Length: 415
Image 1 (spheres, rainbow, N blue to C red):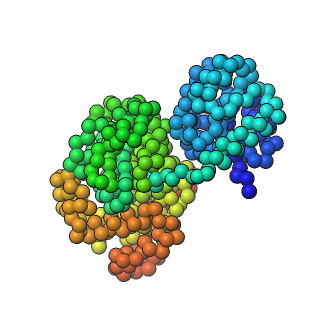
Image 2: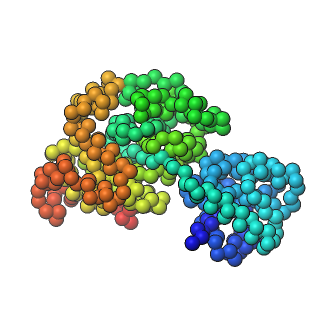
Image 3: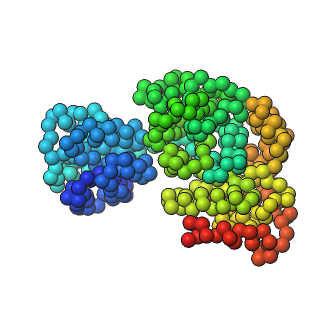
């Protein structure tokens, strides 16, 4: 069965929009997944949908169209770029091809020419599918509330995975992930972005700071001002570059839903949403899940991770799960002194305290990352988690802690 050709269209006028949509509708292979009259929004749609092809009209200022072509080609090289223009010339076609376009379409559209372009796009896409390029798995660690231990989890998880892993600090203004490892990096993500056009494996390796045979860090810049020119497409390019060379890419994300964070979350295979068992963290997690829903993320993409769990939590676990409408995947026990000591010494807990309960729980979390949803669902309540539930008493309807959560149920996820 022939796979559909998914299209994203840039149309800056109703007439052009109608012409392109009507012409494509006659080919059963084609499915238009997004259409925009704005180049920036079109680019965001390309990042989200990874379409088979895009159509970009070339207007009075072709430099803007060519810049868009270059960005799309860098971020999504598997997407066929088709430039469309009313008055073509050899120089215009050549400049389009140099900018990354693979096909050229004259306006108004000729049915025969369009069919030829679509046939070539389908042939290109089929060639890209055989053989499929292996892509490393991207794991984003996130909380929209500070104090939930996102950087601690990301740093130790990256080691616990036990595979060739790149750990990326996307806290561009306040990052300090290297402190967890006692490292002093020479370069940062900003240096990689500035030199991305000439990257090879050797140059890429020079921008990352090695910690062990399996782990390398890509840190945030020391000077916050150096990150001012970072854009979402830059983060996406970095993620795609790293996942092509590492089995796992772990992202340490800031506590905000800014454009760069959303772009990173869009391209993550899994999101570990960290929280603690208190009302403020529960409300923040509820809001994050609501935003994930509006962004179209499937629920199996998100795993709830409770950090600093104790035998006497402020809120019962089942109250939190009932409020959030999802089950907690993993627990990391509260061992404040040991954790802070490892951070102060620049020695990750995974390597410095192998016998710690926290280390055992981090390794269980690492084992879940990359597991199929059904497999993870069957295993996540084993071992220590069984003991946790044996400690829970009382019925769901009689939990006093749940009363404290009732007043929080006015968030966007429920309304």
